[in-house]
Image 1 (tube, rainbow, N blue to C red):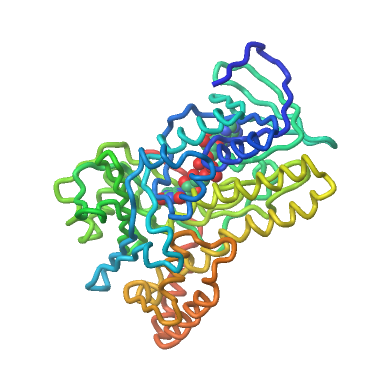
Image 2 (cartoon, rainbow, N blue to C red):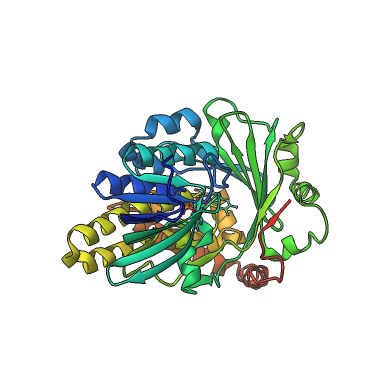
Length: 444
Ligand SMILES: Cc1cc2nc3c(=O)[nH]c(=O)nc-3n(C[C@H](O)[C@H](O)[C@H](O)COP(=O)(O)OP(=O)(O)OC[C@H]3O[C@@H](n4cnc5c(N)ncnc54)[C@H](O)[C@@H]3O)c2cc1C
């Protein structure tokens, strides 16, 4: 880590990156490799805990390009499949990534984010970015040539940077979107989560040991994510009204009571014990009304986040960083082409959340549950769905007609069970309604 000697010095750089999560560390690496003077400010000190431990097969080519594939392999456990367990269905459904349209991406990893984010930020530093941890960005003032950024170090010192460009990768802090009042709650989705690490959770045999499992239950769904050191991450994603029911109960008890609502999960947790405090996050579904502005772009969660059900957040953050690095590079090195570069970046960044959102919004509906628990490969629909689950949604992927066919089948099935569909639609509208206090982030 670089340290500053002057207590209130002013510095210059080409690109100032706010935040050293997957988006910030990736974009800093790429822009430094393109020869720009990059400074990344991170308010925390890595390694630090972060939720979001299940990665997608589409992450792997990005690791290769960044030069961290071996390091990520060393800290991860392979996830070959995603398993779904529904209380309304007798079977357990396993989706193998090897069966996706593109058979070249058969697995992904589960990682402790503390280790993973540490690998990425150290890589940014190795590749030439100046990385300053324990330094929180407090203010950014834009002017004709760029921006002046003020930040405060852990020890109270203040520094400023004159930069030609800002990349906001501040995650859920949404630094720029908050300042511009451009962040909006997603009117079509709303959920909350509580989670912790456990040991002694039963695992599958062999290659299936690292599979992610999703257990639906009455108030949402659970994730079960095996990690390489024997720990297992377990989280409940629930509607806000359910979180509100916690009342004054300690979060530990509330998570235990919630797990008790899923007999299949209870059975899997026989003999398991919790090894971390329970944490909770509320109302994490939001978007920003724009992706960029003069001298800045937004990346990853600093732009939007919908829901963790498809484990897409890290992949979207990192892939967005690749798109963002190209756009910023063009703005800095060929200003005449900035407008076209930003228009392309805008399309690329919006594409990710859009591709997943239709499925996310319907994931807890009875019709979608039926289709997931009994998938058919008619018109290659199952392969296309698997490619979506793998995060293979960019470039020339041919999955879109088959996904359209899947959506058509969904609507026909929903029509066939019209009363059930109408009742589920009404329930969903109630479920996603905002609940005072239930939307706030809480800690156990
Ligand atoms: C309950 C839940 C479960 C999830 N599960 C998954 C999953 O299984 N798989 C998956 O892929 N995704 C998951 N996600 C989403 C995932 O966590 C995020 O999408 C991902 O971390 C986004 O990366 P990012 O770099 O945009 O932001 P972050 O990873 O949040 O990084 C932002 C960084 O910016 C720093 N920062 C913030 N403000 C400032 C400031 N003012 N100055 C300096 N630094 C600052 C923060 O300290 C942080 O390190 C989950 C999300 C939730 C809420």
